[in-house]
Every structure is written in C-alpha cells, then in structure tokens.
Length: 234
Image (tube, rainbow, N blue to C red):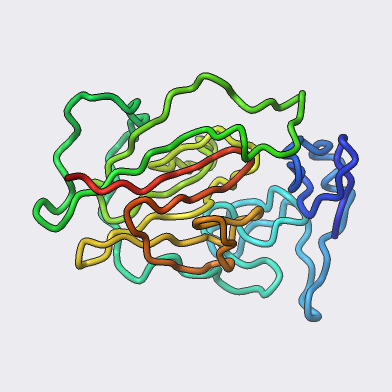
C-alpha cells in the first residue's frame, strides 16, 4: 500500500515518507488505512498487540514489530538478527564521543583487533531536501568504539525501551534499523533488520535481513543523511 506525502511523493511507509522522510499525517490517518494482506494472510489492525511481546502495532502498514521484529503479515517471528548471544548492555547508553585526538576506551577483546565506527551526517545523501525536516549542518562526526558483541543502529525510543548503541536523529532510519556484530574471530559483520527504508553497504542495497562482512573503510549509508564508516585502529 502506498500513500502520498505532503511533498507529493509516493511513499511505501505511512509515518514518514520513504522518499524524503517528511512526516505523513497522524495516528487517525494511519488508523483509517487498512493493512494489506499478503499471500492470503490475515491483516493486522492498528493497535493490535504483538502476539510475541505484546507491543501495540503503531502503524497499520508496519510489517514488523518495532520491539521484537514479529512479522505481522506472515504471522511468525521476524528474521533472527544474530546467532550468537549478546552481552548484557550497561544500565545507560552514553552518547557517542566526537571524533577528536583524545584517548579512546580500551578495545573489546583486546588482541583480537580493535574497531571504531565513525558516524557522520552527509548532506549529499539528502537528495530531496525537506524544508520541514532539514538535514542538520555543522554537526561533528561521532566515534563509537566496537566494545561489545553487538551494536544496534537506529532511532532511540524511550517509550518502547529501544536504546541503540549507535543512536541516530535521522527521520529515514528505523528504530531498529541494523546491527554491527562482532564475530568470534574479531571480524565485523553488518545485519539489516528488515528496516523500512533499507541499508546500503558501499553504495549497494542489502537484502532485508541480510548479513555482510565488513572491512576497514567500508561505508554504510541509511536513512536520509547518515553515513557510517568502519575504521580499524592501528
């Protein structure tokens, strides 16, 4: 199902335009649109509780639960993001540090290779600017050390208790958009979590739920203006 955003684009998403990221309507407008049935599956009504975790479906067209990734259309658990268990996150997630010459935290799994993720706002990615949601300017790059087995990338949502290790203020990014995973041998991999607007690695679209190996210098782009660069520490 598609809708038309305030800027006139045809969007596959009903909360934010999948083309320009502009907000589309409100809760009442979303409630008026029925969810499309795929393959004969029963459509799920707006606000119906997720059968897996109990989270209400916030958008009638959203295929996956924002919290546990349950597939509302196929009526089954969503794509499992990782095979290995994640370490317990800290009680609070600090904001990424600006990229400076200051000393960085000790690497995760010292001796197995140390990695950083440089998070940048790239205005050149925002090909259809929206005056109501302009691309930020002058923001410094942020540096996130890979200091655990998984780093969630996405928009923070305290109400749903979604607190990514790499938080983004990008309206085109999903709350649970992608993950960077540390493999047992110290290498990294990128997982797309069936995000609404997709994830690109070195300019190529990743398949929904796909996994790709990462190397130093790889560029991950997502949302309207977000670029993440993989960097190995010397």
